[in-house]
Image (cartoon, rainbow, N blue to C red):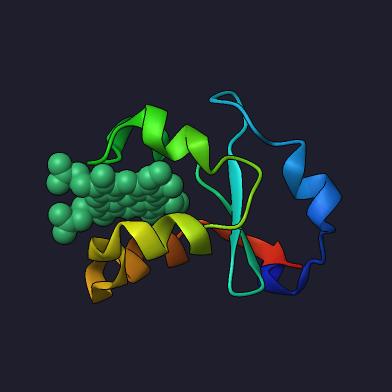
Length: 81
Ligand code: HEM
């Protein structure tokens, strides 16, 4: 499956804009470009984590630990680190 595709952290870091917005979380890589405009916390907040690991941000905004948020993220998985 596509979730077996491997990316480096360096490759993920290049996708750091609203045109191409990737994040990593717990060893998986997500392309959330399409989600940015729909983010309840705003596209600008999502952009803060663009190209990076979500963990430090989600540690600060703990509403993201809810199951429905994890399910949304899972839809955008494109591979792993
Ligand atoms: C709220 C998803 C990244 C800040 C939410 C909610 C979802 C979501 C579904 C609504 C939660 C609820 O009300 O039950 C995501 C996803 C992310 C992401 C999928 C990454 C791919 C971030 C980042 C930040 C952030 C990086 C901050 C730097 C917020 C804030 C809210 C929020 C402040 C609350 C908005 C409000 O209720 O007014 N996010 N988020 N999010 N998010 Fe995110």
